[in-house]
Length: 194
Image (cartoon, rainbow, N blue to C red; front, side, top):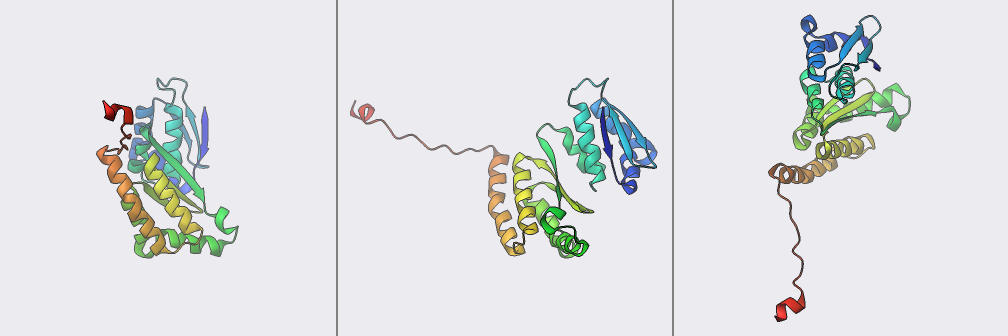
């Protein structure tokens, strides 16, 4: 059994229209989900799930929706090689509300430009909600997006972060093509002599 609490304003999104999101999560993971709409407390019963990871996948999907992702984006977490990372901005700013508000603005950017660029250039999904920045992506996407977000949270200039993202975009393209470069080993001198 897994337990999670989501913000009250996100409970309706976890449930979905006529229970569609909840049912889709249950169907895809094989778990039973019990939701207390009043408090935002959610229980995940995985006792009948065929996949031993069903409960954990349901937990992560619900957690992602609770952190501001749409259910469609959160469903990426059904893939075994896709992960969720939640970063608490207060770890970088302390407990001051003005500092969190300011740093949230740095991650989002003017008209959402910075968040959008992080998503486009890393391939990851990014959500800024409350005091957290959450990222959904595979190992490489996560590495790139998390580094970009951490750089911004640590005070790096936006232009520096954009250059970093552009450089790392090449790594993603190489991974997408499945091309791996291997150095050729130098020929053995005795073999050359033969």
